Each structure stands twice: as structure tokens, then as C-alpha cells.
Length: 185
Image (tube, rainbow, N blue to C red):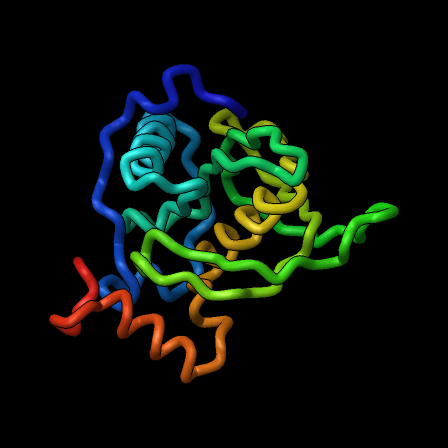
């Protein structure tokens, strides 16, 4: 599930909210497991790193494909680094002493700047496949579990601000747009 030289790809521009319809619709399943897929994953890791992100879905760089990458610490401070092709998300019950969910600030590379408090499950698992089509699983807690949920939301056509009340969403989008009134393309 890890790619050697994973940051050796070419960073691509991040698609911002409202600038490309691919960000607002469910992504197509990946069916070709070839060199192009590997290059896409390398570009996704490079794009995430260049944007100082902790996760990135393919549609955030304008690609209609069910893939995400992650490099994010979990509740124990351990880095969760990897990728999943054609992921399915399962929200897991908390273990003893863990909260069922956390409400903390969340942000998004596609809505640059503002953050908003959003409830997410504390523990989550994503199942899918790797670049060869072999099964992979990522289970995470805390911030990494939040990231798994956030990235699968992207692949389902939902940006985190879409989960907020309309007035808060509009305020955050206006803040991200700045004085010119437009989000960067």
C-alpha cells in the first residue's frame, strides 16, 4: 500500500469548491490497474505534500477516479500513510475509553483558508485495493479517521462544507473567496 518514492510525482493544481463539477459528483470506480494509475498516485502524493495537506482525493486534482492518499497522524500520534483505490468506508464503534465521535475543526484544500467544527466518528476503516488490485485496509483513529471520512466524502461528491448548515457554509465560502469574491481556480 506504500509507494516507494511516493513524493516523486508532479504536483498538480488543487480544484477549489465550485470551480469544477468533478468535485461535486460521485467519482467513477477505477478499472485499469496500470502505469497511469501508479503515476496518478505519485502525482496525488506530490500534490498533497505541495499543498501541505494530510489527505487528497483524486477529484481534488480534477481526476474522476475513486482514489485517495493519506499522510496523517492518528490519535496515538502514529503517521497513517498510504492510499486506497475504490474505497468503502466503515464507521467503527469506539473501544473502551474512546469517544464515539469527535467535534473538532476541519479544513479542506479545496476550500482554502477557513476551518469549521464538524462531528466525525473517532474510529473508521476503509477497505479497497492497491495499484495491483490486491485488497488493502486502513483502520485509523482520531485525526486520521477524520481524514479517511473526509476523503471518502470527496469521492462521493461531498465537500466538508456541504455538511454544515447553509449559513455557516456560505460564510466559510465567502471567507475562502476573500475580498475579490472568487475562490482561487
